[in-house]
Length: 260
Ligand SMILES: NC(=O)c1ccc[n+]([C@@H]2O[C@H](COP(=O)([O-])OP(=O)(O)OC[C@H]3O[C@@H](n4cnc5c(N)ncnc54)[C@H](OP(=O)(O)O)[C@@H]3O)[C@@H](O)[C@H]2O)c1
Image 1 (spheres, rainbow, N blue to C red):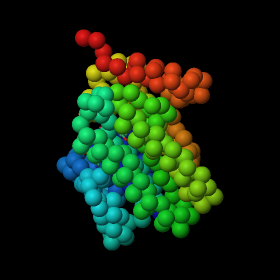
Image 2: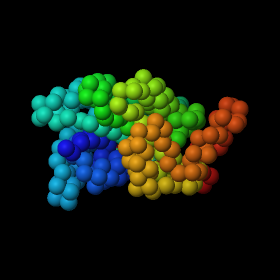
Image 3: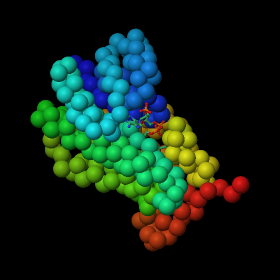
Image 4: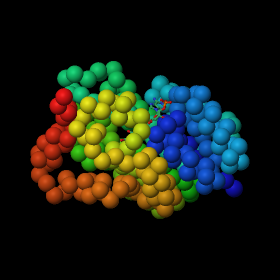
C-alpha cells in the first residue's frame, strides 16, 4: 500500500522539490501552503504523472486552530499521514532594533508554533502504528547565534534542538525524527527575508533540488540529522572548534550589509 506524506510550504522552494521526490517515489501526498492555485496545479500534475492521490489544503499553518483543522479534515477523509514534513518557514533580515515586531511574531508562529503543534497532533498515531517519520526543516543557521537575523536563527536553533530531543524520545518505536539543516539555498527565501542585502547572500549557494535529494534519501533511512553538502557539514562543525564569542562575531561579519 502507498504511504502518504504531508508537506507544509509545498508551493515552491525546498518544499516543492521534496514533494517531487516523494511522489516520484510512489507516495500519496497532502499539499499544504497558502498559494492555492499553485498547489492545485501541482496536485493535478502529480496525479496525472504518477497516478498517486494528492490532497490540497490551502491554509496558513500559523493561523489559530489551523493545524487542528488539517488533522481533523484528514481524519474525516480517512487519510493516514505516514510521514510529516514541517517545511513552511521564512526569515527576516535586519537588526532587532529595526525589524517589524508583527512579522517576527508571525515568524515564530510559522517556524516554531505550527511545526510543534503539527508534530504534537500527527506523531502519536505514528507511534501507535509503530511506523512513520517526521522531518522538520531546520537550517545550518540553527547551529549559530545570528546577528542581523537574530529571531530567525533562534527559531531554527529551536527546531534543531526540539527535533533531536524527540528523535531520542521515540527511539525503538519504529518512528523517526529528522532535522534537515540546509545552508544557503536558491529559493524564494532570500528575497522574502530581505537578506539579499547581506554579504552572506553573495556566497556559496546550493540548488533546492540537491538539498531535497539529500533530505529525502536521509529521511527514508531514518537519519536524525541531515546537513546537505560537505562544505555545510564542515561549517556546522565550526562552533565546536572556536570560542562562542568568536563564532558570533564571524557570523556578524558575514551577515552584515554589503557596502554600496
Ligand atoms: N533557502 C534557504 O537558504 C534556506 C536555508 C535553510 C533553511 N531553509 C528553510 O527551508 C524552508 C523552506 O524555505 P525555502 O527556502 O524553500 O523558501 P520559500 O521558497 O520562500 O518557500 C517557503 C514555503 O513556505 C510556505 N509558507 C510560508 N509561510 C507559510 C504559512 N504561514 N503557512 C503555510 N505555508 C507557508 C510558502 O508557501 P505560501 O507562500 O504559498 O504559503 C512556501 O511554499 C523554511 O523553513 C526555511 O526556513 C531555507
